[in-house]
Length: 302
Image (cartoon, rainbow, N blue to C red):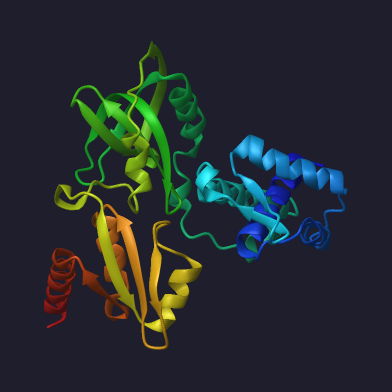
């Protein structure tokens, strides 16, 4: 079995356990067979062990329910690992389809070709992150179009809406900065190594927000309560904005959800996208901000 096939099995196993009510070993085995994977029970058991050992996702057994579940408290970034596996499976499907010939392109539509710029830098940057090596590159600013030379200490690669970003310590400004990988050119891994800062907040920063930009007016993590109409509530449940969400109410009249996040421009923009379909309940400052933005937008059409 190819590595792509193995990854697809892992993805199917995790997704089935997440979406099902304590599926049994037999149910998981039958699902894989229905998907074309004629594997033995021993191979499935090894897959479950590999998911635990290689990816840090704790697939646990519940004797009372006689089935498996994902133990999120003892798992490492389960949602992110699943997202990575899904991307790997999707990429392989695209590769296999394109191998059939250029005619297959007629049946595939990409959102934007520009999203793929800079992907050639990911491997170098990942190596720099893992080995604590400083990198240099030229970077083009979206705001000004100005090209600057940067020398930074990379800490993290972040994907958001199909684009990749580098989160790095910039000694020249004595602070961390985020760089769009699609705007990085002339990337060089230097021989200079650095001692990484042992600060969990570096990673936690992105765990607690939507997107990549800094907090709105320096605000910290707080409770955001939003009221959607029922139809938009269905979409939210299928594609949540953030892993911290808690459904407070789900009725024929209202879908009420609570998020525990750091507010930033991406959160504000996402709320504005839904216009009259969503209403900010709290905090007061965010409700006022959205109200002002909508009033300003209305003036354009007056």
